Image 1: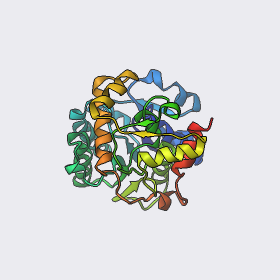
Image 2 (image 1 turned 135 degrees about the horizontal axis):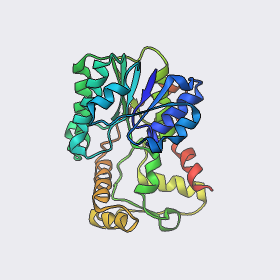
Image 3 (image 1 turned 180 degrees about the vertical axis):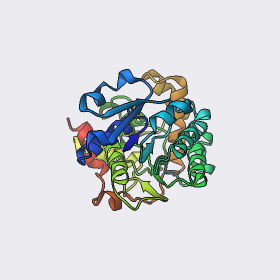
Image 4 (image 1 turned 90 degrees about the vertical axis):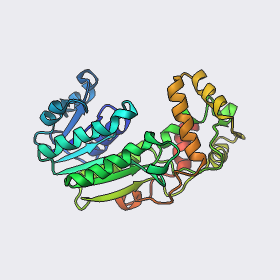
Length: 289
């Protein structure tokens, strides 16, 4: 039995869809959700749904009964709580004899020394705890979602240009669907125990280069602007983000500017048996409509 946590989130849903595309029987997939009312899509497909909360150890132990492989998708709750929540999941998995835990970590040059601090360090702490707890594990070190580019770049970028204080820093953006397929491969094939994979594109791009890609795709000249951080936060708030979320995205921009995501590593081709979708092809699906 495969269990996917965070199943109603973007990566969780995409991973379950990828499992189904690989022909995994619905009775071999369990979706862990906090709110059962959001799981109607899974139920309609015949997928087993279990309710569990990362902070409710009893609910996790109950949900993990009979599970062989567990995909732990990192928590989206308050950052201060995430490591303890992950420990709860890992401890519950160990107590219920889960055979293999796959964790969606984060790909940066150095999680412990990032300018983002505690906002990414919990990934390193979770990875260290997984290794310590002596349950077979796989770390999926995910880069930034290519799907985030429209949110990071400003409103109506085809007319207004890209606006983000990301300097010349490059990021190997990868679509969520590719990350999900990599998860599905590890969940359904052998030989991944106690390994760490970099889930990133083979080529990293700066936002200036993304502007050039979009110019080629659309036939329009797309400019790249680098506002001050305060202006960028105000821009995001105007677009509907909360002050906290806007400041959070601005710190991502700062990490990009410092080259923290440009690790020049990728294990995606090894896992998928093909090169991942190129960024230009991904952007074309969004901006050539």
